[in-house]
Length: 83
Image (cartoon, rainbow, N blue to C red; front, side, top):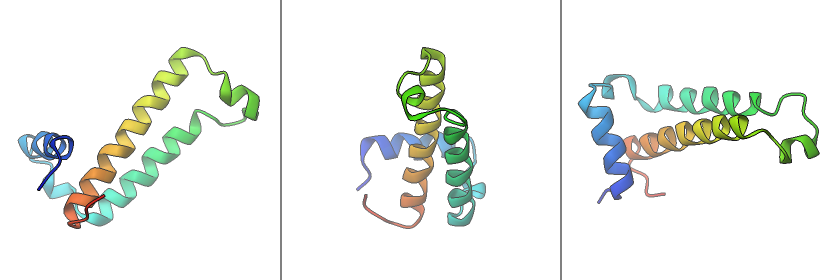
């Protein structure tokens, strides 16, 4: 049984006919790409700076984390894994 959140993600994907692009290999690649985008927000910052980021950067970080979580949910679904 799908969690309600995972079902919403899969429904969103299916409404756009994106399943054709969401095989496990491509989803794993997407996770890594999004993780790189997350990391970019911390590039050249000290530990202290990374704890005191401007609100727009924190918002951008939240968006990257959401992207990663969505792709993790999709790959788990494709591989029939219960997280």
